Every structure is written in structure tokens, then in C-alpha cells.
Length: 94
Image 1 (tube, rainbow, N blue to C red):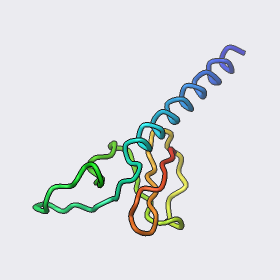
Image 2 (image 1 turned 90 degrees about the vertical axis):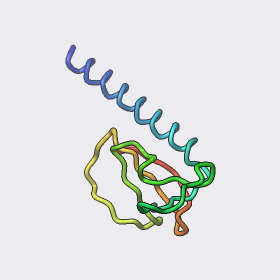
Image 3 (image 1 turned 60 degrees about the vertical axis):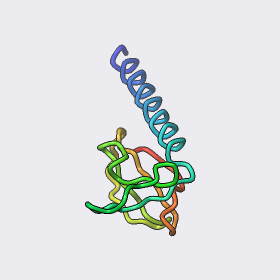
């Protein structure tokens, strides 16, 4: 019984962390355009744009509503969803 309670508490804590991750990055990326910045290019306007380097280490960028992705579940991974034009759409975790 104790293991069940501890597992449930662990799951609840993981869910809170996931929600916080998504909310934090949704606020940071709202209204911004994704740009693939190569070495030597001009600076990114951080008020309007973001790059993969500005995201947490464990992330993936899904371009378009029908983007292909692996189905492995990683609770600490940030999934950044873009629309067809590369504009931030929403974020999920997993």
C-alpha cells in the first residue's frame, strides 16, 4: 500500500513539473517565429524570434500540424509545435 501511495505522489509531482514546463515555455514563445540560425548569420530578434539553442536541452521541434514524431514518452521533454509558417503554435511535454 505504501508503494502505491508513493507512486501516486511521484506521478502527481511529475504531472506538476510537466505542466509548469509547458506553461513557462508557452509564455516565453507566444507570438514568436522559429528561425534556424546558422553560424555567422545576423543576431536573432529575441522579442519576435527564437532558435533551437534558446530551448531546454531536452526538446523537439515539430513543424506543421502533421509533423512526424516518435511515440516514445519522455516526461521531461518539451515539444514545441509550429504552424506551417514556423510560428509558435503551442507546447506540450512528453
